Length: 320
Image (cartoon, rainbow, N blue to C red; front, side, top):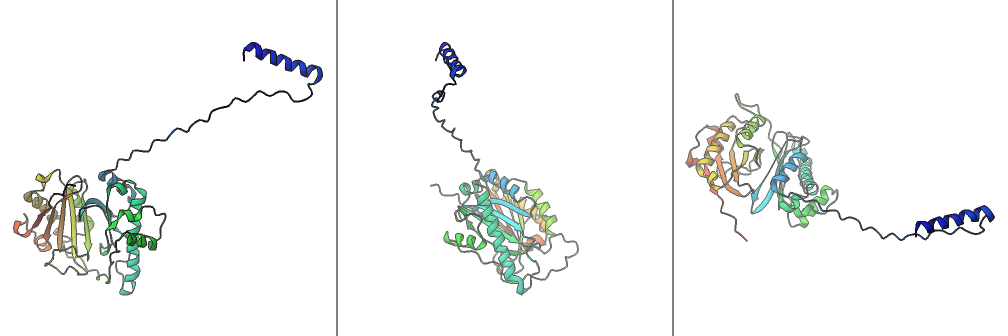
């Protein structure tokens, strides 16, 4: 419509009102059809799904708790491992309280595993399994397991019973928790050091890139033949560090690094029974597994005698 037409229509309307009131309704302008606006598609966020990125998120999620988190291959499965101290478990639980402490440990391990899978989406695409290790405030073993990531996908605020059912439905049996009451705490030997101080020193020597240093008492982390693997009070320390390539995982270099760790652990109380080490590449593939008997550590045999340190080089993964 031209401006002249607009003025004509407006003038006629005004004249009609002034003279006779224009019985009937005033004509309404025809509405102009507005085509629907298609919603702008929202781009899906690009996730940086790498193992190091996941580890950084795990550190944020578990901040404020006493834990160690790292990743490595176990049985050709990329595994997100979390060692966690649960202060709610009674470290001096009597025989009558073991069952309740077991339930607490299993519930904690399953809950932590579910939260990591549920709240960190990249866990689902990067990792095959979660390895919770639950200890009490004296670092005594209560629950250790390997849980498939796929078991937790799609769950919503599950109960412990529902988590157990989901894991079993995925074809994995829940590992047995502790069955015996903890040992009575002993007075530390003169000149000994506790785990917090030893752990800080070990971590200082390992660096910060996908490393780990944790203590589990009574979980069978000992070299077969040195001590009964089913002992309720064996003292096992595990450490892990990353190397850039296989040349940095040579026997001499592994023994040298383990020697530094052993020096720190010589004063540990309770006295160490076994030191186990995992040397991994940046992708978490295990290159070397090594065992140092606790007797060597306690005797402060530094440098470590090559004949007493068992070093196993892992074969390269089979390419598909």
